[in-house]
Length: 416
Image (cartoon, rainbow, N blue to C red):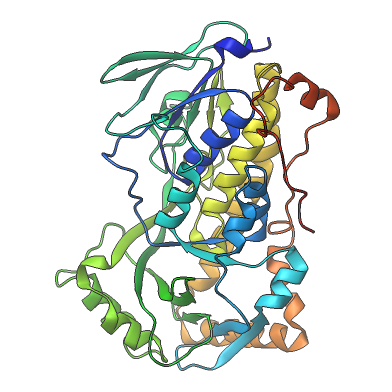
């Protein structure tokens, strides 16, 4: 049944990138929105995030795409190297932008969170306020219910954007095993730019990788990954661990590690959901981002897919439309795409995890051969991912939203 406009209240559990994007997009589609955040502030956990052209087009829908494109810092050549510094494959920022309709933009997560949150009215996000799904509701009748320290909230729609260990997911699908350890741990750090210029790169070694990417503000975002036992921590600190693992790799890697403040090095085990959920909704409750489809970071698509989720969910649940049909359409559209990206990310993670000398030599030779045949072959890894386009409203849907706030549905044309 359609959701009456005056009663349309959505509660978003979690104020990460996906949750905040969903809040903005839902408001533009006529919803009243409350965002519940367990943490005391919106300070994000993490360092940098790469926004590919697919998520930039999604952000176009809420009027943020060009602002994010303006933060692009990678200009010119880059590619993949081995620990000694030899280039295994080469590509160029212009070639990537031409193929997929936009640049790769590396931003600090705090910057992205701030840019999205600015589009929400004061009071929309309630920090220090965890939300627990008490009742998923029924699409055709009973409202959903969320329990908070300040009392219960009834909602026409609840969105679980509460991350990889989502309590909302467990409430909806208690029999699902949830995410599993991928065998990989990661480190992330942001440091001042080194004195010597460098070309952006990702370097693959035996069972490990390192990436060095520029940010628009002049700093450097560096990330590393390696196969490791789950739950491991270095007794002498994670900076010391980076030095042991990567300190003899090519420049600028040793200098970046040296420049890192020990307390700024973030270490996190990587979990992913190889077994997909049967759907991304039940009743009046939907999941998005890591809560729905946690993936390895090897394609850099975790945050990008959360942004896509938010835009597609808002598209299918605009007030005045049938909520049950809209949530079913959201699941049907997002589940196959994200499950495929989870699998592809896991395949690349397995390739990265090769550690034996013969296997690493074959892997490096294959990368070099593909690069020599043409940089376009390397970029094909992202075909079907970075070229995604957001859904379009039909004329009828636009007419149903005719009473929305002025400018709420002004969308920029997707870049091709």
